[in-house]
Image (tube, rainbow, N blue to C red; front, side, top):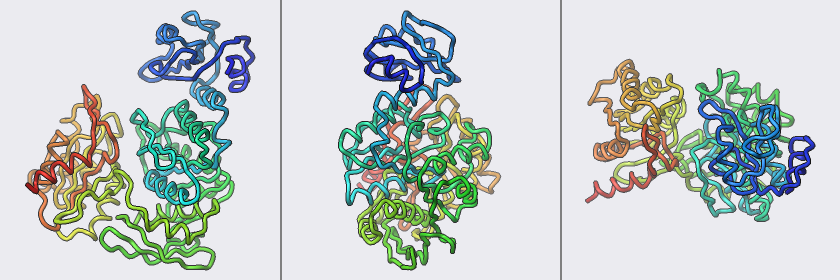
Length: 484
């Protein structure tokens, strides 16, 4: 694409630069020859400081919010909002790929990834489907390896992935949509056909000013979706209904369009009745946790509204097993070991409540609290762990620039306030791998271990390093070691 055509199409600004453009980036490390670089100003760094670097790498122009004509010898084009411009430029460069796809967006505090995986699985019964989620990006069932540790990739990566979907002859895409993604314009320039909202509880309040702002950002999905599938059981339902263009609801509420009846839990399987349009359907879900029935019904509703018969959805649902790091059963015999992403007090409480009915003896929970995130969660996570398990092990979870000892002291205070006693009700083990080994060595017949907080994530961020991480494989290693 020619630079002047890209700028006109994306930003409606007329320039005269007849230069070939080969890509768009807002990260200087990703700039290649022919790229347009968007110099965004953040809390930690300013993209303008990397002007000489990107010029040396072969960038052909710089976009920013300053009143300049050139920078580092490159054309400089001013815009009011660099983050918004990044999304517009990326979408224009890839020729607005979402317009060629039937897109499903999924938002909510919890359940996004599980619902995305479930929906991708249901849709794939008819058509090759793309999946863009925090746990994986898939073309059909082939995984694309993506870099980063984000809830949603930056807009150039989002648009590139959607373009890959389109170019691979995929007609529909499931897109997990986070509040950060909306607030930082990463998800701008996506046309949503069906949006799913799972639930809303306080989260990311270190980023959003308050719960109301967090909710308002989440509402962007239903505002932008042609049809919304809404959780009628959630206290925030009225806000999402009021903002939706068109909507259907799901849940146990009597007024739900897709109504959940008679949930019966049997070990790692759940059976329930789904009522829709005057008919009752028997459903089988091979997942732990009552809330996963809600996630499954949300996925069924969206697939059904896209044209797949409910009976086909239910047959397909029986074949679904698990989501990486989402109530993933790693071992079921002797004692159970489950890996889950729960990293908020509410999510942790739900996870522990979900495994209580399938536990014959004690619950051992391992949990940490992330550095550079909402500090109020630390004592609350500890309280939930103490009140809902027999043994809690507090450990690291992406401490980042913070001192892990200070984080764990705050968790210990929460445990003590909840009546916990050190080395009886809770243990503090700073090294996560050592904590996992301790949990497994403590386990007895009939116990259930919940390794919470990391789930699918493949990096563990410490103060001075980031290391490769695979919670499931580490757990399997120590399970094998215990058997010997």
